[in-house]
Amino acid sequence: MPSIELTNPAALPADWRDFVALTKPRVMSLVVFSGLCGMLVAPVQLPLVLGFTAILCIALAAGACGALNQWYEVEVDSKMRRTAKRPLPAGRMERQSALHFGVGLGAFSVLLMGLATNWFAAVLLAASILFYVIVYTVWLKPRTAQNIVIGGAAGAFPPLIGWIAATGHFAALPLLLFAIIFLWTPPHFWALALGKTDDYRAAGVPMLPVVRGDRETRRQILVYSVVLSAATLVLYAPLHTLGGLYLAAALGLDAVFVALAAAVARGRAPLAAPALFGYSIIYLALLFGAMVADRLILG
Image 1: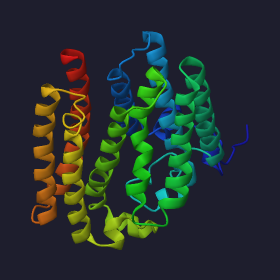
Image 2: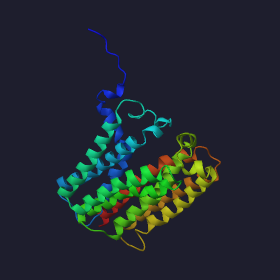
Image 3: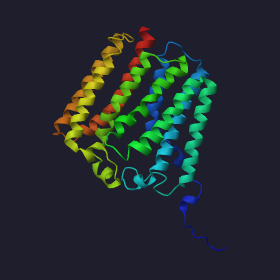
C-alpha cells in the first residue's frame, strides 16, 4: 500500500479536546457562575429544568464567543507565547471548522434561550455575542488601548441575562451587577497584561502597558479598583437590596483587592500583579456568591 504524505495536518478532523479548547472553558466557568448568580438573586425563580437550560445557553454563548474570537485572531495568537498552542495557530484545526462551530453554538444558544425562557433574554444573549465578536474582537482590540475597558461590557452581560431570563425585565440590581463586572475587568486583565507586554507588542495589539507603559497601567489598576470597591457597596446602601452578610463579605474582599492594587501601583513587588490577577478571579466568585447567600439566607 503506497504511503500518503500528510501536507495539511489541520485537514484531519480535530480532536474533541480542541473543540473544548475553542470555548475557553476556564473563562466560561466564571461567566456561567455570574449568570447563575444573577438568576438566583432575582425575585422570581425559574423551574429547575428551565433554569438549567438558561444557564446552559449562557455557557454555549460564551463558548461561541471564545471560538469566534480564536477564529478571527488566529494570526495574532500565533505570535504570542501564551496563545500559540491553541488549536488554530498550532495547526490542529481548520479555521472554517472553528467558524462553523462558533456560529452554530451561538445561534443554537439564542434560539434555545428564547424558546425556554423569553425572547428578551434571547435578544440580550445575541447582543452579548455580537458585542464581544464585532465590537471588542474585530473593532476595539486591534485599535485602542481602551479595548478591554469598553470591551469589558461583553463579559458583564451574564448576570443581567440570568436575571432577565427569570423575570423578563430590567431592574436596578442586575444593572449594578453588570457595572461591577464592567469595573472589575480592567484591573483583572491589566494585572495579567503587565506580564505579557512583549507578547502583545510582538502581536501588534495596543494593550495599555504597550501604549502607555507599565507605570500608567499600574496607576489605572488602582483607580479602577477603588471605584469598583465603591460600586460593590451601593448594593447595601443606598439601594438596600442586600443585607449585612453581603456587606461584611464585600468589605473584606474589597479591602484585599485594593491592598493588592496598591502594591501593584507602587511597582516594588514583582509578584503583586500576578497575585492580583489570581485573587481577582476568587474575588468575583466570592462576591457574587455572597450576594446569593445574602438573598437566600436573609431574604
